[in-house]
Image (cartoon, rainbow over all chains, first blue to last red; front, side):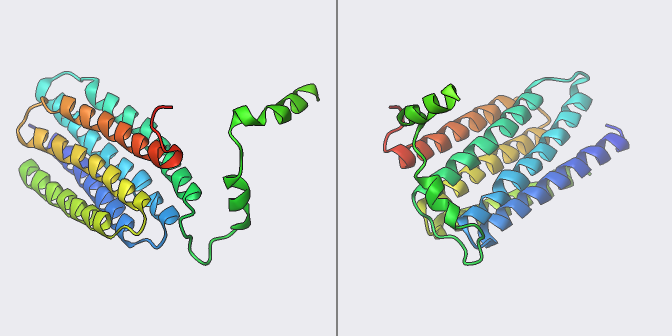
Length: 131
Length: 89
């Protein structure tokens, strides 16, 4: 294996490892659940992307041809991480998890919590349909 | 050089897993615990990929893909259960 390939793989792996560590550190240190959601969903996904990129370069160098599996894992994680974060934020909102004192626009939380699901909302939708 | 890097990054990820475990024990609310578990899934995927590099084989990508899918499905199932009281209505 050439030195340039080893250097590229090492840089990508170290980038990924540092971002994963930063994400977990943020998960431990940040004050509030809504703030804490940021660290694993952004930093850890980026870190895993770095590790996957390093792994992709390594496999290309080892086998001589590229495979689609790494890209598949990357695409899957990039699609699913925001969905998980959204569902967890929604659960936290409906379970009335405490926020930090200096959270802004707290008065909108009540309104968002009482939003009805679409099928109970049919009168309003027909009214908008007529307009 | 690559072996040293792989071991160093594996130590970093193990440290990250310990921090996640701490949050899993600490977590004031159950959503914190689900979030820590989801992060642990992602970190274990990275650890498995590193093990594949260390062993010079591409055999472990299927395991990583399976853990990614099961981690997403389990997190969404926990979330739906807490949100609606039922997983599939």
